[in-house]
Amino acid sequence: AFTGFVAKASTGDDLYRRGLYTQWRRTGHYPTFATFDAPSREFCLVSRERSNTPLQALAMLNDKVFVEAAQAIGRRVVAMETTIDGRIERAFELALAREPEQDEARVLREVYDEAYAVAIDDPDGAMALATIPIGPLPEGVQVEVAAAMTVVGNVILNLDEFISRE
Image 1 (cartoon, rainbow, N blue to C red):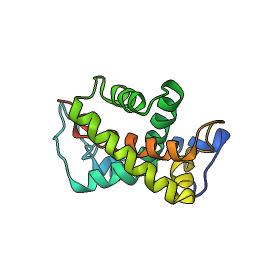
Image 2: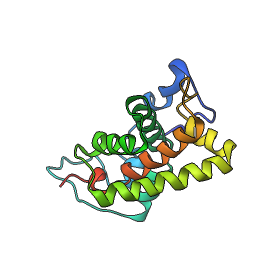
Image 3: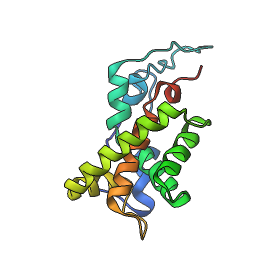
Image 4: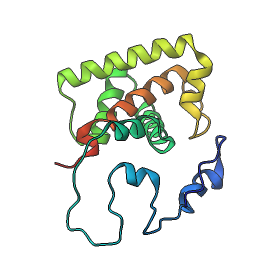
């Protein structure tokens, strides 16, 4: 059975310890796998059914694993690019292996601007969003920028194009 996540932000060797020791049994598998309709492993399957449910969207937006992935994308593009639009375009390319269309880039820029404004108004919330569970920010990275890029990364990771293979 799944033992849960570490409640505090971890650093060093124990950051990924819970993921390493996750047990997967035939009769009851990892909860996130069940949310995404993973087969039970009792039988071999050639192909899986494709589904898209609200519960999957909630998992992609709120599960610590996906939030950590969004944080990592945000930090990576902040280190790679200097402009906001360049960061958004790079994050999109990293996740989807294509450039964003003009409308997609515009919407993501609006998401960034709104998240940045919220981060300015709520510095404690911005710090939590930018650092938990992945850990402290690299030197020189503004908390508001990291939090806003985490939100953008989270939106990109929640796109149907990212979740499902066509």
